[in-house]
Length: 236
Ligand SMILES: [Zn+2]
Image (cartoon, rainbow, N blue to C red):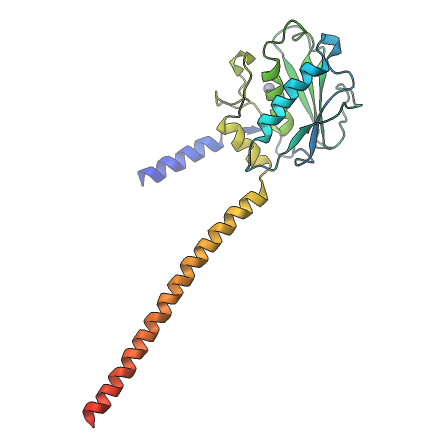
């Protein structure tokens, strides 16, 4: 009982940690979204496409690594869309640099709710060729916004606002991030597979119980028949 209560409390508190950016927002093509460099890329900040691509590949690798989710992103070819455009083609998340002002803003993600797509602006006033500390962490975090999550209060989450100062390169998602992505894009095939194995287990149990029932029934009638025969013999 205590174990169950603990489990229930754990699940309840856990489920409240990740937060959706917008309850109606989802990537329109979760199984085949391309993360692409915007038409301008980060050239204005002196950051090459190769550096940008390395960070994008890390983000894709991390967010794809959730078997219970159908989200599968790949790094695509360069996009013809600017990161300042408010309309992003379906099936795309684009990333590039834009001037967001000096200060602590490392990046901003805007979702195109109508198309189920997003754009990630890395701040060219924050990052440049000689200041790349936290660049990868920021791309991983901003991609979480593109997926549909907003800031989590779980300090282990890549979506935490406190963010460890972004001075890190996460190599895996926290359980909270995994829960968020599974909630947004559940892998029905995986869940169906689990249900199937549950069902066949239940059917096995049922059929063996049914078998036992039939055996008992035969046993009862068999005993009745024998008893009748015995009585006839005794009476004769
Ligand atoms: Zn954020």
